[in-house]
Length: 189
Image (cartoon, rainbow, N blue to C red; front, side, top):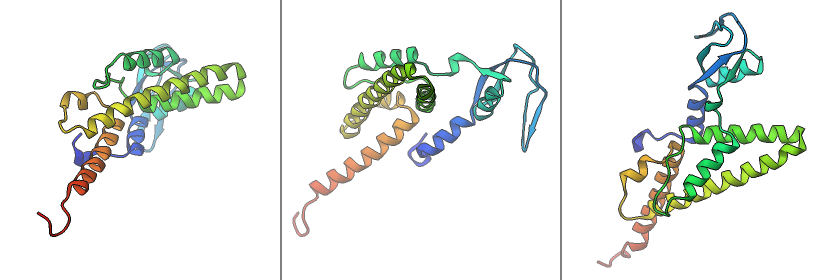
């Protein structure tokens, strides 16, 4: 994605909602026709690819189950956290695809469960703590890179799309600030 093509976080979330995910049919179900979209038919125990927002609705109805590898869970979050913490301050680990949209949905789901079951509150609090640590750790590295005089494509390639937006915004702020600070006052040369 080039600088001119950068989108905002809401656009990225919308794009995620419309990406296909793998589901397993819980039961047979006929084809569903929506304006401009046909979903199904489904045959019990078979795997399908369905756009995320539709998969979530079908899951609520008990028609399909989104495959576990499509979801984020506490174990996966721990692994991502460990991997990120193992990196030096100038290196960054590659995040799984769609990490941030999955993280937001995972935390929302944990919070919803925690409200109904106080024992699950501990898992929610752990997940929030780990998520904040991952975000803060990566943010520090992005700020460090954005303020560096030389940029490395290798580092940029490991950033998620959300992080690229942050990186470009911070780089621009720092560049403008440097220019203003180092600008000679009018009349001086």
